[in-house]
Structures are given as structure tokens and as C-alpha cells.
Amino acid sequence: MYCKEKLSLDTLADTFLKGCKTDELIGIEYERLPVNKYTKLTASYYGEFGVCEILKEFAKLDNWDYILDETEIIGLKKIHDTITLEPGAQVELSIEPQKTVSDVKLKIDTINKTLQSIFDKYDIELLNYGVYPKTTYKNIKLIPKKRYKYMANYLWGILSDVMMRETAGIQVGIDFKDEEDAIRKFNLANKLSPFVTAMYANSKIRGGVDTGYKSFRALAWLNTDNERCGFATKFKRDMTFKDYVKTLLEVPMIYIVRDNKYIHIDGKINFRQFITEGYEGFDAEMEDFNLHANLFFPEIRLRNFIEIRNHDCVDEKYMYSLLSFYKGIFYNTDALTETEEFLKKFSINDIAEFRYNVPRFALNSKVKGTYIKDVTKELLNISETSLKYSEDKDIDFLTPIIELNGKNLTPCDIS
Image (cartoon, rainbow, N blue to C red):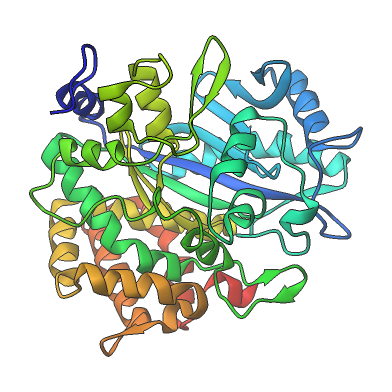
């Protein structure tokens, strides 16, 4: 099925097999919102006092290299760590995966100490919030990254511009040992997603007003291009990497790149058609598939790790609790099994219904007589017990979210 010389279903599935590893590390991508300290308006990428100038100064001070899009600075890198910019100049810090949450914190604290000092100099703070609180997308200019221009022109959905230019989230990376382990964790992460989104809801203020939603960021994702967002597949225990690839093959393509030139496809064909038929004389290559997979934005994404993408940006104490929560669930076989059994009562339709309720009601979302707040208390208990049994010192990071959840509150209720 789906063969044409270099690319086949098997070769594409093998890209995920290469992610199998014996490590159990925690990865994070941490987006924050640059805003003026005094007005809380969005800081621009452009100009003498813009985010681009801050990156230049930080690069010189701490010996980071530029990440360029042709001649435009779109981020920085230093060995395995990167500081990149999202479409609306949101600042994303991605560090090399670590064994413990304490190590993650140490690495982030070290980078933040220097980075924040430069932002302070420019009277800009990096806000730990899920959506710009005052500025809306109409007044936020895209940074000069070609990919974002093409995405903005293509992505459909009434809140796609909000998603791209206004929102900030936290993404967590979880390792897998083999294909069976990957699928098991992938399925469970999908089932967990609405409950964890609710626990960490932190984006109710937008445009200077209370939107009536606990997570406006989650609402924006619900209203962005449902051909490439949402749930990647149905929650099947017998799913394989090939099934995930088959899903990707049916997703409409946005563009390909040849000799640094962007070839617009704009949804005219999907990747399966590209492999079998080509496009305007171009044949499918592995780099095209990698790009296509990276332009697929489900709640949970399969890469050479499990990428869990469904969280608002929150204060650091809650961010570290998020990492500890997942560590307790995914890196303990008993906890993994207990969580699967606990969530077994919810069908895919139940999970989807929770997902649509969560942006407005968060912990008070209710489906078939069950409140999310009752589910999250048990999930936190499973994770805490797992870390306690393992005598894992990262258990201390769980305390803030356990205490907040115990009061039926989310970060947006106290920010």
C-alpha cells in the first residue's frame, strides 16, 4: 500500500521506530508571552526595543547561535537547547530532556536568569499565561518566518489566527521503549488530555475582559483546522505506527520546499496522493513527510517521543507539577495500568464531549453524571502514590497542583 520508490508505509512507520529508547526522560517546550511590564500590551518582534533585539543581545551575552529563516533571526540555539519564537512573538524555550524534574528546573532557572535580566532591561516581562491578556491577533504582526505566513494563509477555523498569534502553551515529551509502549502511552495521553487541560486552565482574560472561558486557548484549538487538530486517531489498543502514518497520509498538505523555495499546495492533495501521483512534477521525499508530520497539530502527537500538547502556559510551580504528574503516570507500569483501568469507563465520545466542555467549565465540566474535578483528584492520587512508592524526590513538585485541585480551582482562578 502507498508505495513509490523511496517511500512506503513501512519506511514511513520506521521513522517512529527510531524513537524507541531505554531512557525515561522528561522533555518540555515552554512558551511564554512577552508583554510590556506596565501596559501588559504585547511586545513586538520588530523595532529597536523588540523581541528580535533582545534575542541578539542574549546571544552575544550567553554565546548562543542564531536560528535563521534566510536572513531573519527567528530563534537561538545552544547545543541541544533552543529559544524559538511562535507566530505572535511568543517565546518558546526547549531544553534537552532530563532524567528528573529537578534537573529540568535547574536548566530552565539557569537560562531564565540571564534571559530575564535582558527582558527586564527592555521593560518586557515573559508572562506565564495561556493567551495575551490585552492584545488580540488583529494587532499582532507575524514574525518574519515564511512557514508562519503560509500557515496563516492556509489554516481554517474561526479562531485559527487566535491560536497562532495569541496563545502560549506547555508541551511535554515522554519517551517510549518500543512500539507497543508507544501506542499504549499515546492512547492514554489522549484519554487524559481533557482532564489535564482542565486542571491547568489558565487563559480566561483576553482583550482585557473576562471571556467566560477558563481556557480560551483550548477554545482556539477547538476552532482551528479540524483536519489537522484534535485527536490524531481513535483510541485502539491494537493500533500501530502504520495506523498513525495512515492518518497522516490523509491530511491535506500545505506546502513543500525545494531549493529553499516554497511550493504551495494549499490542501489540493493529501500526502497519500503526493506519494502515488506527485505534484506538479515533484515526487515525495522523506523530508516532505517529516515537514508534513510537523504541520499536523493533534492534542497528542507522535514523534520520536510522545508529545503532549494540550496545556495552557502556567506559573513555573504549576509547570513543574505538570511534569511530575506525567512522570508518575507514564514511568511506572502499575500507575500506567491503574490509570488505564480508571479511565476505561469513558468512551471516545465521552472524552470528546469533555474536551468540548473544558474550555468554558474546566473542572466543573460534566459528562454522564461525572465531573472532571472528581476524575482529576483520582489521577493526581495515582501519580502521587507512584512517585511516593518509587521514593522519587520529584513528588514535592506535585504539591501546588494537588492543593489547588483540592479547592476545585485552576491557575486562572488565582492569577
